[in-house]
Amino acid sequence: MLLSDFPHRRKNLLTNEWMLVSPHRTKRPWQGKQEKTSLETRPAYDPGCYLCPGNERAGGAHNPEYEGTFVFTNDFAALLPESGPEYVTDQPELFQAEPEAGICRVICFSPRHNLSIPRMSKGRVADVVLTWQEEYAELGGSEGINHVQIFENRGEIMGCSNPHPHGQIWANSTVPDIPAKEDSSQARYLATKGRCLLCDYLEAEIAGGERILFMNDSFVVLVPFWAMWPFETMILPREHAGSVLDLNAKARLDLADAMIRLGVRYDNLFSTSFPYSMGLHQMPTTGLDQEHWHWHMHYYPPLLRSATVRKFMVGYEMLATPQRDITPEQAATQLRDQSEVHYLDA
Ligand code: H2U
Ligand code: ZN
Image 1 (spheres, rainbow, N blue to C red):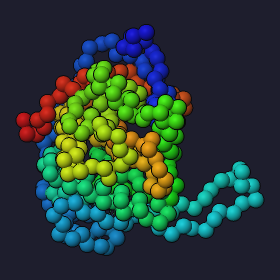
Image 2 (image 1 turned 60 degrees about the vertical axis):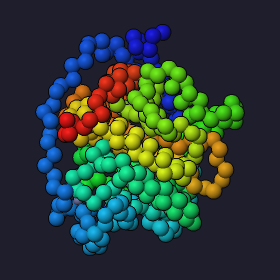
Image 3 (image 1 turned 90 degrees about the vertical axis):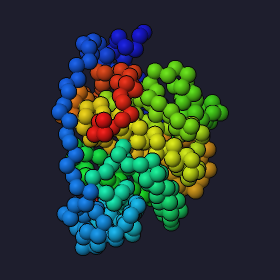
Image 4 (image 1 turned 180 degrees about the vertical axis):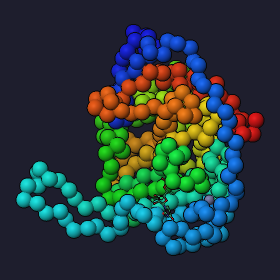
């Protein structure tokens, strides 16, 4: 079977879930709408922004005059450090609930309101990576924290509340479902094959090459075989490592290089500030040995055909399984073909 010709399903090796690909629906040539370039008009400092240096936040706190990255506890945190009381019911099998404690933080990537990762310098983005390392180490080492989720929502369409470049961290006591699935898939693979799942996967992807966007000394950027979002990608470290804590100064710069180059390609694809949710999957901070973990980043962008035409995960996807028309290989080709000069600088 040629995967580009017939409906088929592909398995996500990390989550053990299947997704449907319907390539026969895209036999037509690519006719992506050419959107008019939206020129940046944001100021470097916005007196009304709750993330800009020196400004007041919703909770009444004032941001310092920060010059690099700046981390603060989320004023509307989804998790609180103290566990609430146990839930009591006389039918505990039917009504299952338990308290969940944790810490939520916001990371400003830059003091400059009008920047974003693809338009920041490599050194500045490497500082964001350094901040991730510090936060993962500190939060992960805290009493009762077994998982640290670092992520970024970019763009209004993804529910991002503010264009100021920032991300979030939610750290909590239980390992959430998606990383837990990735944990068991990787553990099972190591137990049965004696090798790391993502080391093997990377080796095969590099050998084939059709889903690779680019590589540098430390990272590979690719569209995964099982991508469910049209332009979903992953950034994978070439060396086996469980978390960002293994990155030295050179590898931090290499990760910055990968994030910037991927971000520029994304922005160039539809000449827009490309929306997405991205995040890191790293080994849970349980303190247990987890040799099976190969940390990585996922980018989940919703756009399909232009800056305004998005993919909806509705209908069959909500009720059955995710589906896509354009194949991961076609998406990889389109992203590979993009310039690495940002359209606003071109
Ligand atoms: P987004 O990444 O989705 O834009 O979220 C930004 C976070 O910033 C959001 O979780 C927090 C919100 O709770 N926030 C503050 O902590 N202080 C504020 O003054 C406004 C927003
Ligand atoms: Zn701002």
